[in-house]
Amino acid sequence: MICDVHAHCLPAAVAELLREHPLPGRYPRPGGSGPPMSDSPGDLEARLALMDEAGVEVQVLSLSPLPFADDEELTVRLVRAANDALAAVVARHPDRLRAYAELPLPYVDAALRELERCRAELGLTAVNLLASCGTTSAVDAGLDELYQELDRSGSIVCFHPRVSGLCSALVNDHGLESSIGPLFEDSLLVVQMIRRAFLHAFPHLEVIVPHLGGILPICLQRLDNQLLQRFPDLPEPPSATARRIWYDTLSHGSVAALRSAWEAFGAERLVTGSDYPVMLAFDGYAANIDDIRHAGLPEADVERILHRNAPGLFGLGPA
Image (cartoon, rainbow, N blue to C red):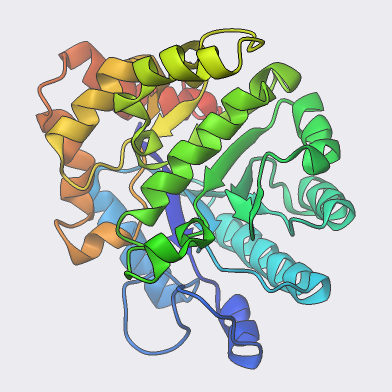
């Protein structure tokens, strides 16, 4: 079974709210033509057809990385609308689709309420969070009450880049927030986790970081040298902490990138992920999944990455 852990959906109810309350920044604009990523019957049928072509049995859906407003009420409305719509999509196609619960961070009390609603009413237990809230990291200590609850239940937590360019003029003023910015966000988030021993504080979380962990695969030895030198109180070498995390396989067709992540983290920490529908504009969805088969990895590792890791993580097949 192939389970794609990184696939986006922009439900019509969220699109309608965005028409009423346009937000700044880069995100899929509602209306107009585009790839099949809404929850309309036509888009869902097109999505399932692409999954069939690629041999993907299950996608785990998340909301597009919207730059939520600096407004608690609007953020909660967007998140609730997204969760209701995603749960309805899963109910329509329970054998093919799963979904992450979205939470209205940085508003911890509201996030805890929405988490409980998603679990009790919608059947959504895995969680998708954005890597930052403005200039506050998603693993800031001020959010620990939420992570305590997620850790208590051993939750799957996927951290997606906000596509904010790290709020840096050095990225955004050059128009690089979507081409290179997410790789910086992925890498920085993991290093922030390492710095504050996040995975030791919350040892029961199953954390997924997309895009092969950004630039992390080529940085582990540097982190072991310099981060340990700067912070000798770390509980283990940074590379050991990095290998506690799951990384999805989106490589944009780069054999070098995929092999680097495989060598750095091992086949046992890679899960199939596509960033659907991004690759429809390039090589296509099926080719994106097929990249794993053509990276020169051992057959047993290809089998593990494609068919075992993600289904085992999400309880869809053998661990």
